[in-house]
Image (cartoon, rainbow, N blue to C red; front, side, top):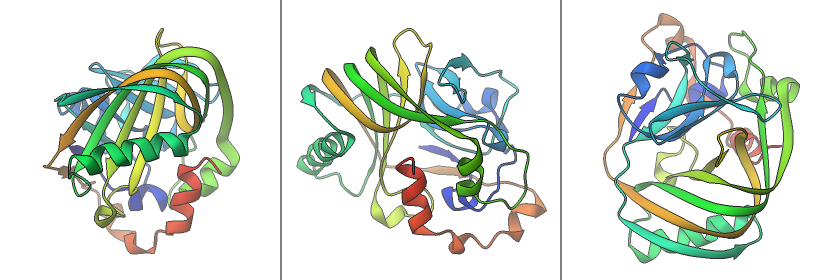
Length: 236
């Protein structure tokens, strides 16, 4: 896993660029994150970096676009599983938990790609806000927009971090979606999956690229609220 900055820093408002999209794609071909000033949700898939705008539409991000936070890896598919009829994101997360638990892998990181046919995908994205030390929850309160995609084919990028890595990233599963035609997508907080296929990759190494600016050292990272992290993750 290659990670840019930490979730704690993003939550507390460090939204400056750390690296560019061009540099990021040298470290992985699948993953998720956001862009400088929290200007949309990021979905990395098949070596392309997509930017979901606040209306849910997707464009391919410019190579020079800044990245303040992201997690990516190169695809190392280890097993595939067919999925039938999962009616909520909680059911999907439970299915994914059981799958990695059966492989004795709950203390590892994972990226799972779910290609499927969806009855619906509830998602969000946001416009950017140039700010410093404004918490992520405040940015999203003003700039986040929710949308629902219905009867759509596409891909979920699902990243898992174990509980003990809390703060580096969000513990548990974090999901982003992009449609098969690469026209819409965003951060996912609910789904209704008709059927699909999950491709699992277990990851046992992480490299973190921290911001090199003096400003980064003005953030008390342990002050990031776990309740706020959960609320942001759930789209609330």
